Each structure stands twice: as C-alpha cells, then as structure tokens.
Image (tube, rainbow, N blue to C red; front, side, top):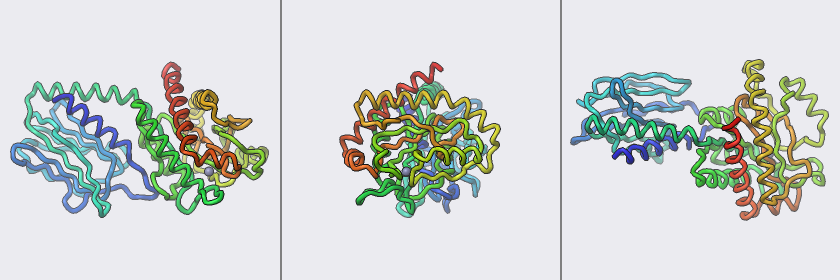
Length: 383
Ligand SMILES: [Zn+2]
C-alpha cells in the first residue's frame, strides 16, 4: 500500500515537471464544474475541471490530517464545493505567483487510490483523484513513504532544455533544414536520454514549433526549479570557413551592463552569430542582486562547460578549434542557474550539416551531454 502511494507521489511529481509554458498564456482557472469533492460508494472523489492542463502535485499532510493539492500556473475563480462527509473543511494558500495549495482537512484518514490529469480534446483538462478511508497506521506509513520520495526527488538533477528559435523564427536555414526544427528534435532526444538515466527531471522550454520569448524560457526554467539551463542551437556563421564543430558558450561575467555588452559585441566580430537573439532581458530586474547571484554561479558554470567539453572529447565528437567561448546571449542570464548555450554545429558548414542530421551522431551527442551533466552534478554537490 505504502509503496503504491510512493509511486503515485513520484508520478505526480514528474507530471509537475513536464509542463510546457506557452508564451503569454494566462494562468489556467477553473472551468464550469470547478473543484468538487464528493462521497462516491465508499470512496471520496475529487475532480478539478480546468481551462487547460496545469502542473500539479498531490500529497497527504499531518497536523491536522489533510490532503494537499498544489496547482501551478493557476488562479482561483470559484470556491471548491465540498460534498463529502470525510472532509471537515478546506483552506486555500497562495504560495507564489499563479501557485497555490488547496488543503482539505480530513475527518478520517484517507489514502490516495489514483490521481490523473486528463487532457481533453477541446484543450481543457480534468484532474481526477480517488481516495479511500484507511487506518491511522496506514496513513502514518504513507506520510513517511512520501517523505522518502521527496528526499529522493531532491537528489535528482532538474535540467531545463531550451531548443532555440521556433515558430516565426526558424533560426539558421540550410537546404531544407531549419535550425528550429533540428534543435527541437535533438531536445526531445536529449530529454529521453536524461530521463532514462533515472537521475534527471527535464523541462523543455518549448515542445512545439512555436516562438517563445526569452523571458518565458527563463520563467519555465525557474518554475521547474531547474538546476541547470541548456540552450540548444545550430546557427550559421557569417564566415562559414571559420565554423565547424561543437561550441559551448557561457555568459561573459564582466558583461553586467548593456553598455558593456554592446562593447563586447563590437569587439568580438568572430562570435557574431546569425539567428541568435541578443535582446536585453533585464529591464525590470535589480541588477545588483542579479550580479551577486550570477557571480556565485560563475565557477559552477565554468565547471559545467569543462565537464561537457571533457565528455565531448572522450566521445570523439567533432568540437570547434575554440570549443569553449563566452557569449552575450540574453537567454543565459538566469542569475542563479548555471546556464550554457551549445552550438551543436553550424548549419552553414557542409560537414556539420551532415553530422547534425544524422541520428547516430545526435545520439552520441545526447549521450555525451548526459554523461557530462551527471559528472558535473556529482562534482557540484561537493562544491
Ligand atoms: Zn540559433
């Protein structure tokens, strides 16, 4: 029993990580039927009728015994309707922007039988939870099992994968290949390798051919509490002769101000890439605070770049003659998350194009990124 609950909790956790954040999408809210808790032939059923699927987690808590449902990217519009004799009352706590918890206080201990978010064809979603009365002992055992799972989740590396470009911005193009499609395909492949390792949770900043703002990409990474941010590109260079092989970019630590950044851009013409958005994403942030957090992330980001280059080289992948570089990409500016941008190769270079479109090569790169990330995460824990 407790094992089932633990697995269920793990499943709920992973659901909360698999959301894609669409640009400008307003938070979801309750649809016509709202949230209802009702007695149903010896069971208690909770249904949440939502305007679209959202990230969610479900767990039991003590003191007093209660069921907690967390919904992210969600705003309350109507009060829940409680029609179960097993529920004494409820409380809603807002724990962050568009993030809240419904606490249903239990009259008697309940166990979770099943919990599922069903995405409907019209874009809406139904969260359905089945609960069943249980003994106080079992309830306690389940609470402990939950804690074990939560501990386990803390050890997992949360990786934000950011496939560049999308939608109206195809990025670089060569023959009939668009950078936006290529990096999206590769991002899915990388996600599969990372998830299969059993040590990572993955959030993709976009899952379809759609333009996502740089801010929304960072927001998605933050919402998932990402430990690391990897932006994927395969750009074209102004001078195709100079560009071949994988390049790992990290942010120039000295480029704190946009004036400084412009200067650097002007003075590093060989790093000018087409298709990379250099927009300034820091209008509204406290630059001093951000710099502090960024400084702390710098040695960790350098170590990340080194670890990845190491695994690329051991896998005998073709890397650029200057494989580690600093760049001025707004998408790398998450102050507190070690962030890198990987040019998987250059679409403007024929040999790279051939490699980039090869499934075998993509698999080798994905494996090398997985190995580098896990190696880095081990070292990072000790730091
Ligand atoms: Zn690009």
